[in-house]
View (cartoon, each protein chain N blue to C red):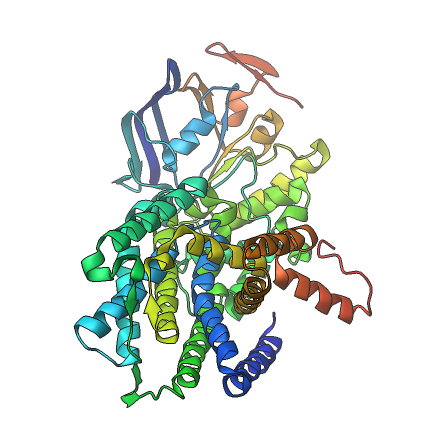
Length: 324
Length: 251
């Protein structure tokens, strides 16, 4: 995407995201906010996917940040959202820094399985350490204050929505710059040919480690923000199905663009909500069906579908072939 | 001429096979060296050893007076050594221009820069200049996976050349290239390398190519240097035997 069209898309998207904050009913704004929080984690997963690495354990950083926020709020009485966000992100970064030392050496299925193993070990710890974590009951988080202003129950969901949106705008801008930087291209190069990257003077282990850190930090940001919206956390935040959902959304969205992650996350969250409402016992089957349709008709994800549509419109309805 | 690379008693065995057996080689700045030898002589192993892909079991590799044994490929590359590959190692999903841009950014130590864009004006101009010198600029916006084998070879070398190396290794730069295009590819490559005064070492099977472009030839057999000298001196006969190694020279 060139610079003017990127700016236009950003402005349109931002406007489209601001409106729901005011007009949507509470329940829908809630779902929207959850989707946006998860979009941070999906972005983290996508960054790793660009380097050819599939993490099945990103729920670990998501949950670690959420629990860090809960502990900080409940044990130390911290109410300021920005401080809590920083603490949550720092907790996930610290974990990613330690785990990254090991996982950065592995690739493909081994990388996926090791990240999954860490996530499940963390889940087990959260369930067993009942005294601190509340076990499977989880923990309640009090409504935070934003910049010193204590939020009223009637307006807190709107304030939290805009807090999440503010963070998302900043992150989207930063990640978009990152993806177009030499580092962003090096990740694509690593996915294709690690040996060549080494022979160009690039340190692949260092690049993978730093990417893992960045990715963990993004998951931590999502985890911190979701606690404010939901007000309650439990160990299932770090369960493997949560990690699987992030990978699912990343693949469904496509890795070509940062906006794809947001669109994909909102799409899936609403599909999930409605599927759960109308088919409470078979909603996973419905999601699986959607995934199958996307894989069959648009292997590049929803973003590729959008790009195809745009190209076809430009070509006056003629079929667009991405390979030509 | 100063000593650029010095290899002393370099040894590596794969099971019982000696791929490098007390190998001793010295390469001076400005030389154009061709390495020949039969299959399994240890030519590519030599290249893999001096570029850090393999670690020798014995011996020293001195690059500009520094021992580089144990250093990883990216560390050796940062010291001014670049290589191209027998099978071109490209980023097939990136365009030809992007391949060079990534090489330029990495070569200047910017591989982990995350703020400024890869595609800045200065870097793009430099990439076009390199592609132009190698005669492949007209395909800059095509995916590397879509270009012909000969052009891939040129792009592979262009990526190594973009690192501004002091010493460039090329592993069979004409393999997979048709007989008609072979000399054209080599002419283009050697012109650019000679103009830039890059010390060049290339592995080649085709003796006519070695004879035409190398100023010095190393003959390897069973991991040892069995002949070292001027191409004409070594290839004075159409077919000759150097310590049991038969060299065929096509004219």
